[in-house]
Amino acid sequence: MRLRPLTEAECYARCYGDGDDNVRFVKLEPRRPRFDIGVSGEELRQAFETRLEQREPVGDPVAEPVADASNGREPAAAA
Image (cartoon, rainbow, N blue to C red; front, side, top):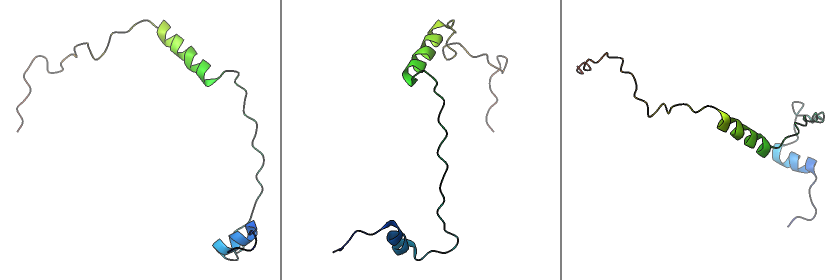
């Protein structure tokens, strides 16, 4: 049974030993504020969907027959 809570330093010492000069704590600079884009992700998705719907329809490349490169000849037999 633990008599008292351990401090962060005590926990670190238990897990990693006393440490050495290679380990040190540094303070990081606060993150820079992000740009306010003024549009939500959902609004952006809807705008993209609208632009896609306004495009001219293009033929379905899967449904169109593919031009055969063999110029109408039978494929060579496998050796």
